[in-house]
Image: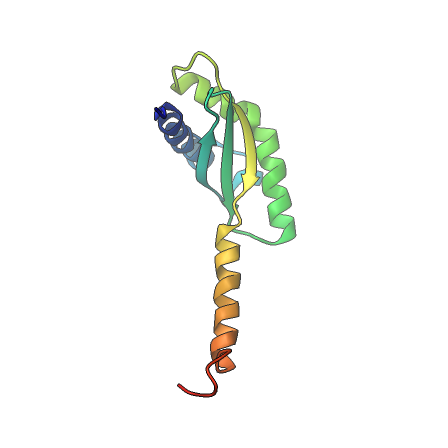
Length: 124
């Protein structure tokens, strides 16, 4: 039987980290970051935090990554004060590139549509 506790903990961690970044952090490197998802290991020792950056330029992504590294201990202290967990998970941040991938797929489909589509034989 699969435990739902990691999913519940992940959901609370996502909410708390997003709130801390959005409303409490004064680090300019964290501006424009949206927490999209959190996955927690079965033993609750590691939390993978997926995020998107509004400025998706290489410089914006690098600034966000550096800001999150700087803020890791601050974010863990926020979690420590708000969650009642025996062991506080280690935070690992990963860029969520699903939106970029979806946009790229849309571009490719648009190009295929504009060229008449492959395999249609010129028929509508």
